[in-house]
Image (cartoon, rainbow, N blue to C red):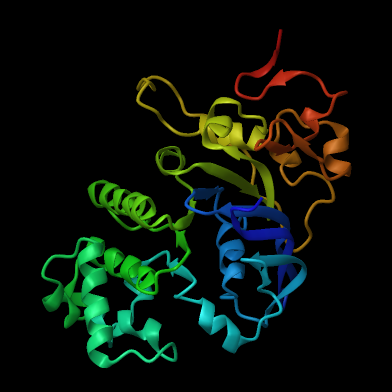
Length: 339
């Protein structure tokens, strides 16, 4: 589509270790459109962060390496770019908000200097212009007394303030895309809501595309236009946020939804966990990665990778239950036959 600014096709990324090769990302394809918020959800180790870091080539290479696929930003291939070429994209074209501001900010540098680092080697801005831009961004992300904060060190700021600084660093170069890797993990609920509201305001104001990586389905429901559900290094299901929550097609997505409490959950009602453990990506299963934990698993699920079944223009599910010959079940209700 014409409004796709990022297109990822059949991406495969692995890591060489002493124990063997870890197949972290396996045949992942998706796109990002201008001005949308795309959510990537899944449990720890499913490949969310590695996939997002591939976009900016932030995974160490080696031990990491691309086994195949394509990442195109505005039609230009990212995978073949040199490190020098990538430095022109990082921060200015695509910004990244890291998972933990406590460890992602440099404790030996002031906040102002860390924001200005984005401009190193880019353009001919004067020192005064860099400072003015840094203060402007600090105001934009809701930091009070920006002149004072500019001269402070990270340890002098609260957790919420540090996260706002991380967002400021991601925004300072006016990027087209911001990748937010679990941006509210270490924050309390009140500050989390403020940070999420800030991201939505920035999207609405500048039409910046946001890739939001999280394990929190509540955040996905509030923030996102479209959602990718990842499991075992692959995309299990993708679609609009309404399709994922109200027309759930993959048993893993259903398991995630049924394992969280809602406002309607009574205190007597037990949450339903997903039994079992994620697959070993040193030796990925030859069939569906979720087959060993799936209550609906059929013999073919362990033998062959499921095909991508298109359920609507946006809604795609990689599950054998969607095959025309499969039994008709409701993944949200169990083995109840659909009328």
